Length: 98
Image (cartoon, rainbow, N blue to C red; front, side):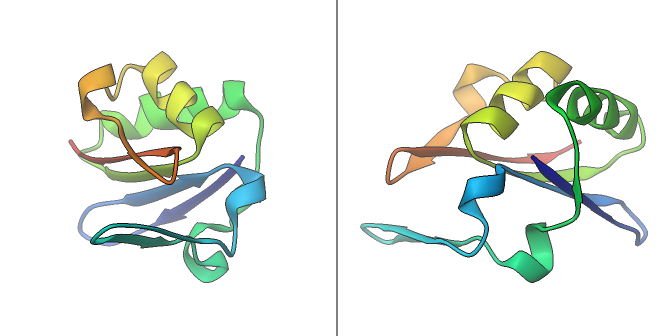
């Protein structure tokens, strides 16, 4: 999984499954472009992603999460629930504002 952290008045955390970089997902009126420039950061393990999400959830961060493994890590970190998961073309994603 890739994790990229942007610093501003609030941290923005982009988390994405490795195989989804560069894809454009479209379904009905929904379109999600998984841009390399936004999502491709450090390649880390699921354990590291869970730790990063857990730590940054305490700092009022925003999360953009795309892909089965990434969404699963967010569930394990406790920052999303099943109800917060949407899908597009069968790919799960979640947007979180802490």
